[in-house]
Length: 195
Image 1 (cartoon, rainbow, N blue to C red):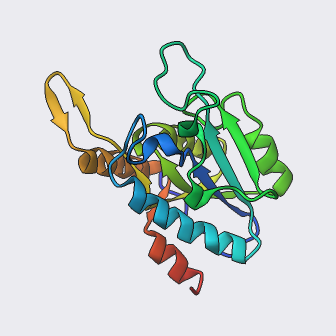
Image 2 (tube, rainbow, N blue to C red; image 1 turned 90 degrees about the vertical axis):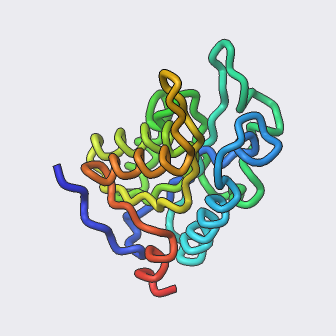
Image 3 (tube, rainbow, N blue to C red; image 1 turned 135 degrees about the horizontal axis):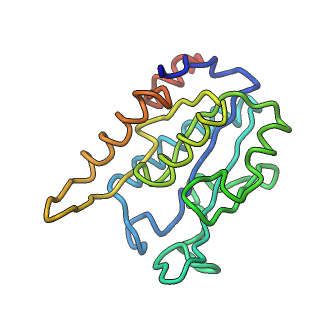
């Protein structure tokens, strides 16, 4: 399977999806990620573009309800969307409880109502909710562009082997780029949009 071609950044059938850019992922939060601040800055650049051109924006916010959850707990400051990309009153917000933003939410229904065919994805974590959502979106027939510098990851470990966050980020994105999404920097995306 080949990745979908990049769509026109000004196409009204394109929506920006901001996944879980929430306080617990930032310095001082319960699950700090590598480069969270940098990723949020790039996500804000994309958000400004979509707002300026009156293109659809959808914020996804994770609330942890599973037993033993340690972050994004209900009614905590850590579960709030980071102020840098906080939704406006007229922007849609999807609440989810699983990594896949489509699972047990009305995201697909809302995208259908808007006539969306292409998603531009930013968010956190690259290795979990971004990965799960992008794969689901592609399987549902959407074309997807991931703004790779507007996403953030964390280090992992398996059987005593430590994998640094930049390598985790790169590996998950490279895998998505093989079949599920087109990978692009925020600056390249905005340059195509004429900014």
